Image 1 (cartoon, rainbow, N blue to C red):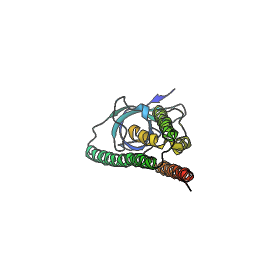
Image 2 (cartoon, helix red, strand yellow; image 1 turned 120 degrees about the horizontal axis):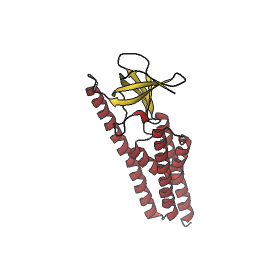
Image 3 (tube, rainbow, N blue to C red; image 1 turned 60 degrees about the vertical axis):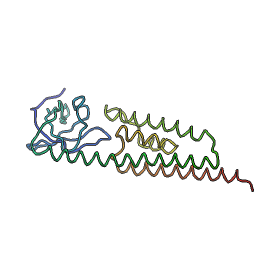
Image 4 (tube, rainbow, N blue to C red; image 1 turned 180 degrees about the horizontal axis):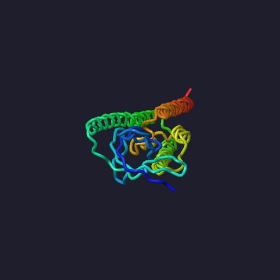
Length: 215
């Protein structure tokens, strides 16, 4: 059972892209209202900081407030800064995505070069391909769960699946789905797992080639 208050104007001042929720601050002052991704109209732009909105506030039986029936607003004074901020974020995202894809290209190129000198078992490439697909599906499922407010896949599962040769698929998922690209602690742990995987595979490769080299 919920009670509905009057419709008000506000601005999105906090947003957690990974978990799909944030807070809207009323333009006339007052307590910020909790908002979930499901409250945004279907087909609307992705939530972004500074986005002007109009909304209703519902109060649950426990007395907690939440925003509902959201609509975008053309509030004066916010459009230019919002567009500028969006352009900066898009530019940063494109640059980050290009560098991430470059890592995959460099890895594949290095693998092909090394394989030309000392042929590697075909199952290694196959294992990377399979784990990359599995990792991509994990990210897709987690993104879907975040949007729908369902139970999430743990970050440890995502990191481990990347560590065991699935990181190329993780990179593709991060860029295509715009998922797990903003949380600094996760990003640091992810790239540490990528480096660890490459180092381990490199050491194993050196061990194999050393054993194959005639005395």
